[in-house]
Image 1: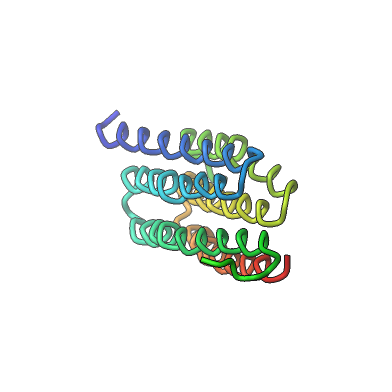
Image 2 (image 1 turned 90 degrees about the vertical axis):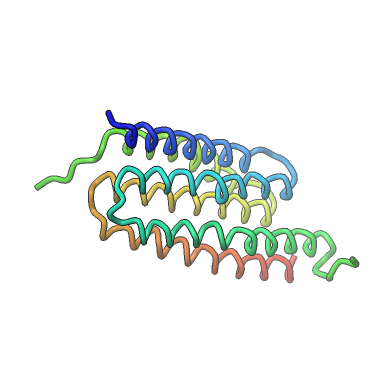
Amino acid sequence: MTLGDLASAALLAAGTLALVLAGIGSALPRSPFVRLHYLNLASMVGAPLVLAGVVVRDPSDWFRLAVIGVLLVASSPAASAATARAVTRSRAGGQEPAS
Amino acid sequence: MTPTLDPLLGWLVVVLLVGAAGPCLVAVCRGAPVERLVALQCLSIVMTVGLVLLSVGFDRPSYLDVPLVLALVSLAGTLVFARFFGRAL
């Protein structure tokens, strides 16, 4: 087993652990805002770690994997902000909340 | 020729499906609509990573287009649902 294999296995295990934590956290009966934090754990930590582990393991398709990672990381803030705004507006009865 | 799955990546996919996608599926079926939307977002991320692991594990690089499209479409779906829920509920 080479150093690259060890690094790949460590990255894959850490990313999978982060994704499992995020999945369990998203299912717990808490506020939607708390769930959004777990969602960002999945998109900002878990998915990039797993994709990095895959690239270290097999670098031949690095470009498509990088595109997937950039899409997940770059789209997460916009999606979270839109969801948080929807939560706030739905609690305010569809009206724009006063800032 | 029957494709074979890499054992390490296969077990990671199993762990992801049971440990992450399962709770997200449960959360998608329960609670307020916006809470379901958050769980759906998390589920789409988990499924994107799972599809990447499967395509690499089966050594089928052309299948990487599937999670690529899923990552694109899930963002659009999230924005549409967020707009709908924020306006109507």
